Image (cartoon, rainbow, N blue to C red; front, side):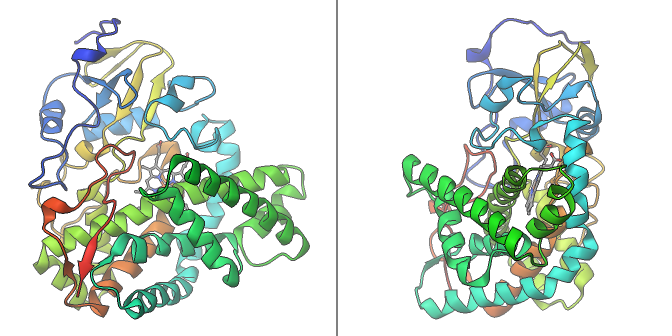
Length: 407
Ligand code: HEM
């Protein structure tokens, strides 16, 4: 069994997340394979200069994410907010342990059922079509697909979920885009976040007066009315959903499109199929193969324990290396992108009690946006050489900053 040294050896340790190869940026950094295949866990230096254990095997990842001795609570372990977590995220239910976490999560699961998301699908399809018509109508070629398509889709999907009135969509979209824009300064991003939060607070008040068929209205009627949540809690939950569901999905649309453009046969198969099962399978494989959650799965051991043959001390930080785990068995030829494989069982949405709450919504967004784009623009192609695409190497979620395309 390997043992923890307990010393601060961070300067000599490999960085996590590591650097991807320019030749195939869809593959995790090469050292991840070595970490997965070697005994014990890998000691690393985090993006915030701390030391941590990295868990790279799929089975170990599932154990970490379901072991109650391992905490995600950022108030109990403030190190969690400064270690690759998004510090802008308010301490809220995703950063709590059960039973506190479960109390809030239970109030929200009904909002994200497959059935409810399927009911949203036709409306989402219309929104996707509208965004595409606008992008094509702009007549700009080349155009940045991230700005014109990948960001608006989740922004409008969340507008729909929260019940943002249609004529306020452009305002909502403009400020959500600033949150992720590289061109925006830190001050501009902070201002956009505050504006959005103020907007959400006013939306909550508006829904109190005139309830609609949306998540905020239901939380107010079912939870705020009984005293389980305050009006402020409802606004905070809405903000968390916006934060958790916007950038992630946008990155999957941007990077997913690039992966398809680099694999034209698979893109053609997805474009030409009318079988929803093939589309659903392709989306699962994109989620597995790309696994964008590269630096957001931080936890702390609350007591000494052994994990993957490694002694981990109480208070040690752990990160679950989802990109590595999704290239592990049982996936055969796991480094090959194959939309016809059975990718079920991947961990792109995490695992255990914090497994992505919005995954059914994310799936519908991807199933609608990717094939629609390929069908509307069969000649879609990258407008610059791959080497010039700017990747999000050092961000919590991997993806592309921009995707210059033409058709
Ligand atoms: C393709 C897009 C998405 C990806 C790859 C993704 C990935 C993830 C991952 C890996 C986690 C687990 C975090 C952890 O264990 O620490 C997570 C949690 C979460 N996600 Fe997503 N997500 C996506 C879309 C969404 C959407 C659309 C929403 C909602 C609108 C959403 C809401 C959440 C929430 C609320 C949590 C925290 C759940 C909890 O702690 O109980 N996500 N997501």
